[in-house]
Each structure stands twice: as structure tokens, then as C-alpha cells.
Image (cartoon, rainbow, N blue to C red; front, side):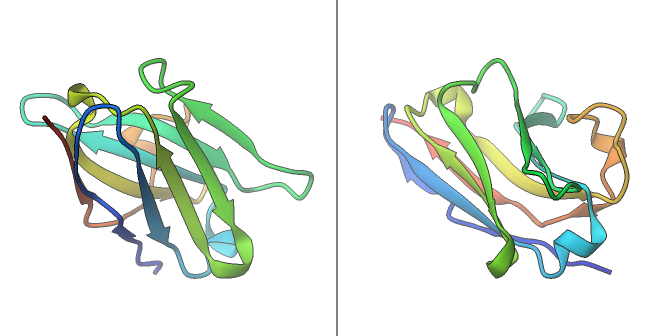
Amino acid sequence: HMQLLESGGGSVQPGGSLRLSCAAPGYTKRVVYMAWFRATPGKVREGVAAIYTGGTGGSYTYYADSVSGRFRVSQDNAKDMVYLQLNTLKPEDTGMYYCAGASDFPGTWDRVTGYDYWGPGTQVIVSS
């Protein structure tokens, strides 16, 4: 069983940046996709970004339209870490951000039920 742990959340003003980290011990042996989801009250959990980690020829990344060009997902295999860089933050980016891992192709990169492993989340608040 792989335990994920997010960190790096906080409170920031609009236009600011944060970097979220996800400690994912042994993820390269356990999953083929790592993703970030976010949840806000009254809304379903939505996919923010994902990275395909299952190949050896490089990685593919995926982004929700709402964050494309502002967020960047990356990984560090040697450290068993996955990151989400959040730039030009907007109030609507506020939410609980979760790191997730899928041991098999999840159907679509942002399909919540396709992910087996979840962290407890880290809170991001964007407010002036």
C-alpha cells in the first residue's frame, strides 16, 4: 500500500504562486499516472493536472482547461516526489488539493474513480 502525503498549501493573494509537493514512496513501481485533484464545497472533485509515469521514454502531462498555462505538474523519480506548481493564482483556484495515483490506466486522466491511492489533501486559499 502506498501512502501519499501532500504539502505546500497555504494562503496567497491573487496573482501569487505556490508549489505543492506530494511524497509518493515507490510510486514508479506502483502507478502509471499521478494526478492532482481539487475539491471545493458544493462541487465535485475535479482533475487539475496529471502526469503519465508509466514509460521510460519521458512523461506526458495533462491539464484542465481552467489551469492550462498557469499550473505545471512535474516529478522527481529519485526523490519519489510529484509536484504541482501553481502560478497566477485566482480566487477560483481555492480548494483542497489532493495527490492521487493510478495503478492502471484510469479511463481518462481526470477520472476520480480510476485512481487507487489518495493523499489527505492540502488546502489552498487564494484571497485578497
